[in-house]
Length: 253
Image 1 (tube, rainbow, N blue to C red):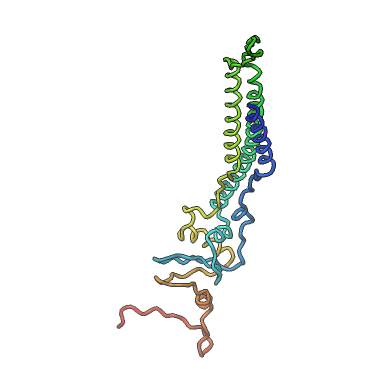
Image 2 (cartoon, helix red, strand yellow; image 1 turned 180 degrees about the vertical axis):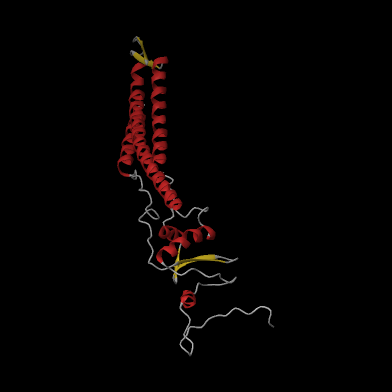
């Protein structure tokens, strides 16, 4: 029984050391996707949609749907992003509280182990003592038998020690888990060509970017040079007057 008490104290010391040095802090919420919104470079943002894929370009620079919606100032996108950020902040607060509770539970487990060892060590003192008087052939003999009190205290101490080990293991492994943070990406409902185009067209008008002509199926890139040339004034004719496109006369063939 003394051996069990010593082992209980050793386990308690080891558990205390594990609490002090091996319990990681609560990780911070992710910052990617929750920083300052993208404000654009002043070039037009165009969406290409084909049967095989779709892409977004700011001038000739590839752009993500997140950057396009941020540059366009989409209120729905920003509202959802702020909700996700608040969700992560709440998870961090809950994780921190859970971390503190795990420390408290582990401390209770250590206390249970120590108390169990003490009770198990005191159990022998509650045994029943019987004395056999000395005779001519043998000296006086004393025998000890465990009654209900001794067995009860010993079993209680053993049970407390086992429960303390189980509680420490549960709290340790539970407290190490990181909160299930949300990694921000454009929601599926907003990550669509039609929606991004709907938000970027007013943005292009606001910054004075040329409108995007219809693209033929299978177009691989957006030719902004062609857009600029389409909006340039027509070259002057030989007599100095601008060329005019005359409508065909009806009735004459």
